[in-house]
Length: 63
Image (cartoon, rainbow, N blue to C red; front, side, top):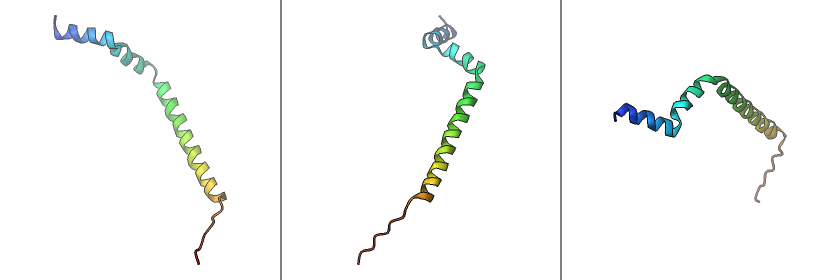
């Protein structure tokens, strides 16, 4: 039993061997998810800005 045999067996058990190949085959999924996350962040930022413009400022002064 060599170190390479143990490494290959461990990769088969944990699924790391197939995972790296699958990640290289589908880079489009990563790109789409990054674009969707970016669109959500932009919508959130614009919504906050619009909300700040419309919000009423109430100032309470203690006499």
